[in-house]
Length: 139
Image (cartoon, rainbow, N blue to C red; front, top):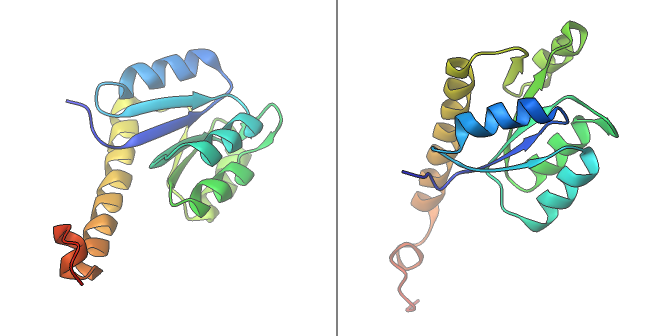
């Protein structure tokens, strides 16, 4: 059963994209981008809940994508295979994965982020007036 959550994979290694997509496609709606430029364009035109982001891309650093994703309300999970980059990711405060990582860790990390999104959505619904929640047109 497909989830309502949309994950954007931002990764330039096609084999990694294929493996991630194959792991996630049954549970989530999955899209991908291979560059900072493509990811930023995608974020401008599509609703995304989670961005699974490689920290080093052919045309720049993933930080720009992370900021843009967070600006539109998407959660970001950063990935890197470089130990020196991982140190910076640990300081970012975002969830992060050190490549190579296993399927269980990937799914657990995404589930945690999605659970937080669900809790944020529930909190936002509690803050809405009753008429907005019920869909009533009356004020």
